[in-house]
Length: 638
Image 1 (spheres, rainbow, N blue to C red):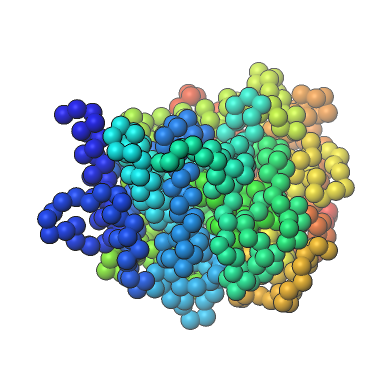
Image 2: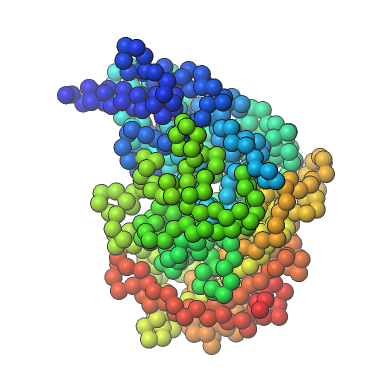
């Protein structure tokens, strides 16, 4: 069979898969002929609004890798289809159950039923599970739903190109496309930002079936058509007709400042990398790894993937949509970020396959659950149906990513062994991964110098590492907020803290707009609207996170400010030079003595280096150095 015949047959198979997965038992036709993609859009449109949508992921086309966005961009045909397909999805009528708007709205606002799954008595908010053992598995079918619908748009676009070699080319590209992820932790190419240029440009050039065009970039923003005051509820979100990142203000005419988003992410990237590497190498229990719920008396496990996830939300949004749980999923970068979170989850699962969901009382409620409910691996991940009968995905049934038709690059070509994964993670995020030259923090890029500093402070071959454990209340302030840690002097302007050269890292708490018990403190340029009130009851809920200090301490040794990494040197140095501040998403400083349950404690650890490149270091002997922050506002609280 010739190549064009193979591709043509594959494209028909692809079309058939769509009929099965999207149209749900709709007969192909009495003739048995396979439908082409142009037949499929009306099939989806004809679905009854009361029918159950079965989430399968991209089914029937094998297990294909989700690529990093910059790697996907190198495949010109797939990239072109991705942009056109996403544009089409975003343009679907907002009342359509499978529209971008409706799928984004599952996560938070408008707090309405999706796919017929009604609210539980006394419940409130969106369906998303946070500060919960279900946090990671819940987002897996959510991403699969998004990927499944977007892939159907991509197929429809591919079939609109001229019959023959051009259509075959795009058909081949569509077969293996999967939703990309955005790696915000790995060092980017020299002098490049960790924030991809592909998501920060308002327009983009594409090849359409009618020729080359410049279109509004669907990765830059979602354009509401229209924005609904009732659905969005709070201003400015009820007035903005596009999603925003780091808006110039909260005025109706505000614009995004993507350049500043990139600066903030670049200055925090070393911290992201350290946190991620520590999570891979030091956290072997799923509950501790996955959720930011506080586990007391465990100084080595205050961080979590959820806590790190929160920081990306807050910094990328910076008072825009991504900063708030209610609105974040409307920003197209949400899906790139959460695919990265799922990638981390998947890699970690393959390294630690024997630990997973344990029954846990829920700290807060969702659209279908209330605080105090006990959830386990068999609990339904609402509103995600796994078949047309109305049954739901569960954490147990969603445990294997391959069941949704995707994998990640580190898990293909026979690289599924724990050793090969560890080697890949060491290369990407370990000490040999290097640091970006555009970071303002000035972290030494001389790895030999850094290693010699660490070795000089070793005890019986174990390296010294230092962490700052942070505790505060999830819903203690008026929405999302950030806690900034500095090592040395820093400026007084809160809007500049995230790019300060002495910033060690940013710990953010990702909450909803209505989290505070009193009206939100507004910026002077925020338009007046109804008095803001709580949308649903918010519990007093402590959450935790960790900011690694070692990388910055090594830099201070290299600069001559510190002699070594021994605690006799580090402890007095940090007593004088470790500082912290809190700010709301709008850039307003919040008084430390008014942050409920704020507690920052420095911890030291001894780390035995890995013996081989395909193994992880071993962490142990975590010790709280309470004297460093004790008796300071927001410091160690015994």
